[in-house]
Image 1: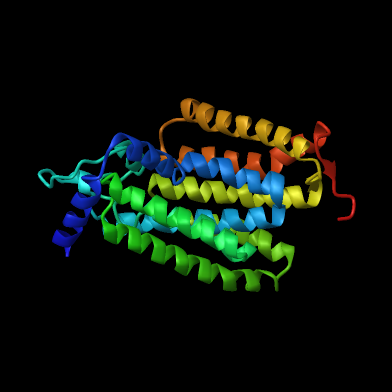
Image 2 (image 1 turned 90 degrees about the horizontal axis):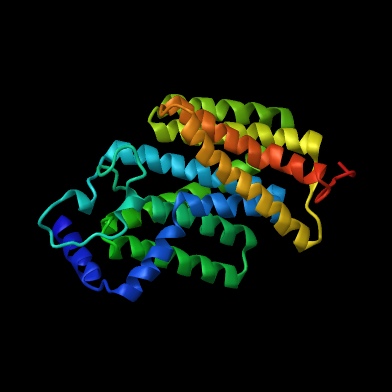
Length: 296
């Protein structure tokens, strides 16, 4: 089986040339953490808070599961072998995990993009949305093979796991509709705590911390800030620029300030979650870009 995958990788990597390499770089970026930090706040701040919080939870749970499975399977990436005749590009995009290069299966780019765009397509449920989602998932996944950083089975596994997670989330959402906000707040606190005990790698602390901050922030915002997204796209874009600049400033600044330990990764990401779902909306309302929802 691995021999077949090696031949597939050789075929795709032999296609490498400057123009395709640049396209592959763009597709790689569309599956990186930086891109997700750009798009997830945009949905919550500028499109829909309800849809934004659902997308955030589905996505973060998916990448958490992905990171946990990588440690469980510990499959070595193609870049971890010598003499295969495979030229790997943009290896830095694969070096973000704490177990690199033994973190190949399942592909984070394939699973993350399938979760993000698949969930958006599922919720919007329009033909054009499905087409865009499928094209993006396919291209991002192929780019991981073209750049020689993943085995084909990693891609298939990542896509399959994302589909399972989206399916499970469909039933979880129905359950959440039947419980009170009080029950949801308890779940928003308890779930990340359980997650960090189940997965103690730095990624486990980061994703759990982010969900804890985001969950607390969401309910504080819902009950006390009550940001109403305006009709004006000019106001939305100005608010988004302010919010995203602070978000990346916090991400970079806190990384420099806090010690390089997993627990502080969790703290850093918790602060990012609090900013995105509580403090940023409060700022938008405070400076007059957004109104408060008076009908709550």
